[in-house]
Image: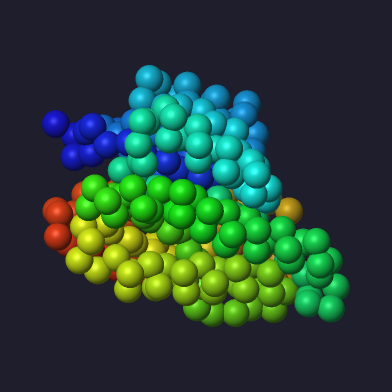
Length: 239
């Protein structure tokens, strides 16, 4: 049987890019997957690819009320906390700090840090009570390094790393696992409006970036480890 047969999973930002590929690979590994994102039509497209092993739940991660409603719907549909939570949804704004709108900075923190906290808080107590569950956080090279024009994203991802490390410390011996998957730049449509090819910016060419499939395989690797083994962190880069 597939390694994750019988497991229920939640993937945020599942309508495209890394999140959509994680959802596909989770379903291929036997899990039933709740797909969460803002654009329902795009979620339905991914769900149609996956088939009967998927559930679509619209969620705006910049809105705490929407996140609360989505977690309640997950609990209702699964009847419990999910076995797997993948916090992947993200917001990416590039601008020098003196030009960055406050609303963009706030939206980055809300989407990249506050929403993941709301999701794990909604499910963590029940995971701890049953002594099982796995929380996967999708970080970034920006959770440990900084780049010009990247103040909002780096601040949110550094905070996300800190939250993961606190979570690790709190979960030791509980049976609940936590993994940070921290990739370098990944070739997704997040980069569409950004010049990565002329050499005028510090960002790598998209041809030299990681693929979403590679990041998803790392997530599945962590999830498929035997009970009692926790992959604390995976740092991914292009060879």
